[in-house]
Length: 310
View 1 (tube, one colour):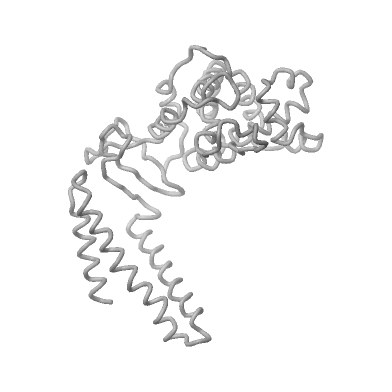
View 2 (cartoon, helix red, strand yellow; view 1 turned 90 degrees about the vertical axis):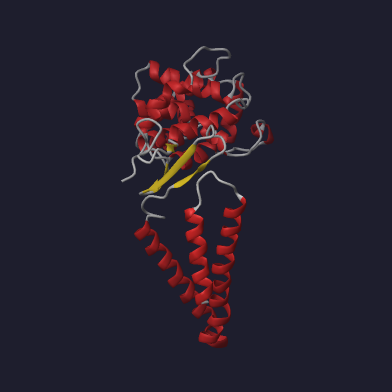
């Protein structure tokens, strides 16, 4: 076991010494070698040795203790070296990044794309920001039809952000308007999902993903914009008539009108006013061919709104 760990250390050192952007065969071989040298002894340690220590009746307990100590060591090593709780950098050529070398960073509560004034870090490595990732998602999937409406996903998002900015909403709320339906681009459900009688719960997909990068002032309205439709149907007599046929159809799948009690509970939630404003912009953002600013126009607002790693 000692020699196995020693060889794996040499393999890791060799892997860390390789030039970024070089060939892929040697790194693949080295990663496979490390896996073989580390996982092999681990399987033996948590299996046969656990039985030796615990016997027939205590083998499971012994294996659990071995695994638990191993996980604890991984946590402590991560905190010390920055792999889990500090900074984690991957310096490599990434598809979809325009051939640039991209440095991803992880810090604090969740993985983030480190902000950079310009596109280079102190080491001259291009830094992928969250705005880059969002724009990449829209460019890859935003051309899809917007669930029964005469606009695409990207057109809908841009129009919602346009209406938000036009009403002098703060940058974080403009960003929320732009990203309120990003959950549609993150799940793999078909465009005609409502016709199948399925509520995609895209607001939950979107909220969970956005919460890694933005605070509740931006993510709560995203999560609540579907409930805001149900609320407005219950409290505004004219609102239902303003909905598109596709939105009326999805309303039934989303639970229909709020009851009086549900409406009052909704009104007590944080950021309820912002959610209702977002809902109004959502309903307006379905005009085919409408000329509005593109994604780059909102890059600074996205960056200004995101969480910062501590």
